[in-house]
Length: 215
Image (cartoon, rainbow, N blue to C red):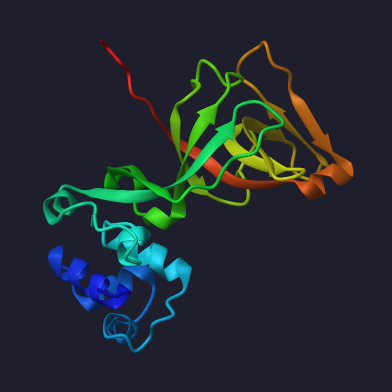
């Protein structure tokens, strides 16, 4: 099967119309028809990701790299969705996250009224945010380019694509930000002046996903 066949098969499997799918991914019914019938074969990667999320499956399945469709119709009815996993992010400095093509299944209610592609999941690497965040925790993050207000916990990328999870403190209008750890054994890092041009916020933490082993 080609990608169009898989889109059509999966859409019918979960009982979604072409119109519904178009609305979910910000497209048109005509485009969905063209995707499914091979009229448009070069589907943009961002559309593949959006369609796979709407159909509760993965891009790998739609592209034919994986024969496992993922969530079945009954799971979709139960309110599950897939969010992209972006790999580990440091809870210390001087570490680089890795980009992986994986997804995490979770309750749709965690996302509120937003779409799965508005979020990503990362895993915590390090102890500077302990005890609020443990080494190995997975965190659900809202994709964003600013924190909204000072004091929120988010992921910031700076320098040579180094990333860290920290509380981000700042005063609007001033040319500095503080990356603040929770663990008192670690020091706050201030970024200021021209170095701010090398920084960008990529996500704000919404939820900690932690598995507790009671064995």
